[in-house]
Length: 404
Image (cartoon, rainbow, N blue to C red; front, side, top):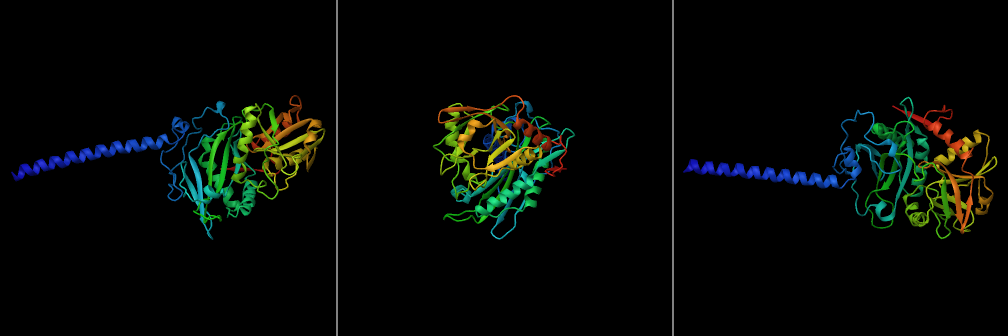
């Protein structure tokens, strides 16, 4: 009886262990399915990411980069939508400490519900691009300018910021890790989004005790649905983008959500975007929702001066210098909305939009049209800008940074 009892007991334990293993396997599959379902469908379609959530506090180091030349993307259908690549960069610092970080697999991040960025909007972002040249070199365009602007914005928002060297090195490392997501020449760019967040917990209105610098990338092409076709802008006198004494001159995240209502209103009426006027007088041009504005009259190119309410764009700065190199007179000044009726051309500039021609601007139910065919100043400047960014034109200014 002792032997049989032991045998039955042993069989029972084996069966129970099998049942527990089967249940564990089923639960594991269910968890993996739920995790996979929480990510965008594009990621699942491309089979390019892990399904695990990435924590800011416990991050896994990537083991190796993919050796495939290009990611599985239909480059001809690329727009300005999120197509997450394999890796992101996370760097953190606490009060009185230096930023330290590394690459991680792209994934969700963990934040305290009382994080400064969630409660009080203490955050900044920057955007730059990496391009692939015809001879397969990888070029960044003036990343130190983005680093400098982030440091300027961080001072305004009471945040520590990575040094210019840390910023640029992190961008380089992130781009190289995601090299296969850089579109082929002529098919787009790799957009690089850098974020600085007040990630530490805080209840009262005060700077966060901890900060996170994060980089992710996505292959992109045209920002506007019009592609390279001229834009149709709308001047909405109800809304303003920024006010004197505010934070319109820095790239804080709090500058962007408030314009969504104005954009939605304009798009519902068939316009591409909104051109904002100054907050005090409602008669001077400021900028479009996410880009700077220029007007052309003969050999004179004018753009609103950056006076604290207008973001000093890196593309804006570059176009001003390129235009002067090509013999144009460029003025940074206050521009009355009434000057639009005399303009030959109007165009927008920005990292995302590049240089976009404007076909018309509607103000107070009056549609003003501009030259958008034939020889265009905007097209000349855009060709030179893209030529520098993609290595087709020799860079004598030292604006491009080649990474290996």
